[in-house]
Image (cartoon, rainbow, N blue to C red; front, side, top):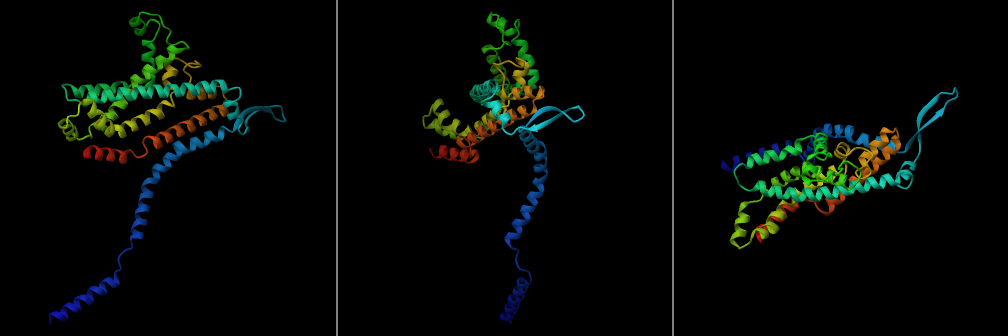
Amino acid sequence: MTTTMNNTLVRAQGAVNHKRPPRRPGRRRSSSARLAAALVSPTLLVLGLVAVYPILAALRQSFFTESERLDADGFVIDEPQFAGLNNYVDAIVGSGAPRFWNALANTTFFTVTTVVLEAVLGMVMALIMHRAFRGRGLVRASVLVPWAIPTAVSGLLWRWIFAPDGIANVLLGQQILWSSDGTAAKFAVIVAEVWKTAPFVGLLTLAGLQMIPKELYEAATVDGAGPWRRFWSITLPLVKPALLVAVLFRLLDSLRMFDLPFVLIGQQKQSVETLSMLAWQEATNIHYGLAASYATIMFAYVAVVAFAFVKLLGADVIGEARRSKRKAVTS
């Protein structure tokens, strides 16, 4: 009797499985892919409208030049004419080459100098804010003040400080024309930029420091490692991913520097003119084709620098963080 009931249950289970075949994994994956595409498509649409279209429009504009001609009735017609690569040739080796190479050199100099100083000062600020002391919360909140101030307002503030009768000259006991065209103007821009954006690097680095387990420092202390040894073997390798992200953001921002030198020093100053300022100046002079070529070159420059930075230093920051933590634990 028991054997007969077991056979009946087996046949019934087989019939159910025969009527309801299991769903294939491929269908499940395709359904998930369609759902993911539906969720991401609004973001991609907005990104295409605010980023991709302006880039393509600027690229197209760079192949045209403005010109005026008379029609058959003697009226002036202002319409762009196709110029090919003439705008790029004029910008790089033509009449606009001196200003272009000067602006490119200024952009590179400001980027390298400010990012290096911000990385060093940001690391120092993060190490100080990471320590336990009374009023640490107030210090962390006050660090955000320079970063929260709009760049234009910050430029006006430092313009008042670097005025001929400003605080800087009073403290130094000299009469330096900081807003003139020269080395003093470069120094003023660097000081104002580092003051404003070093807290940003410090806060991102602080977030990376808080992810390091305290047990690593305790084990290193028991093994006899001093402060410098703990910093070079534990802190720096494990905080490197967060520091690289902060430096990458600052690289992208510094390469597009415009408002701070524009407000602090002024326009058409050779010592502080950047690529963004040069493109804006040509656009205000209704040289839209040349301005678009400058903007396109700047976009390509920023993209190449960002790609090289990610590939050479921080291609896999998550994986690198895990490997560094595993290495520190095993050592």
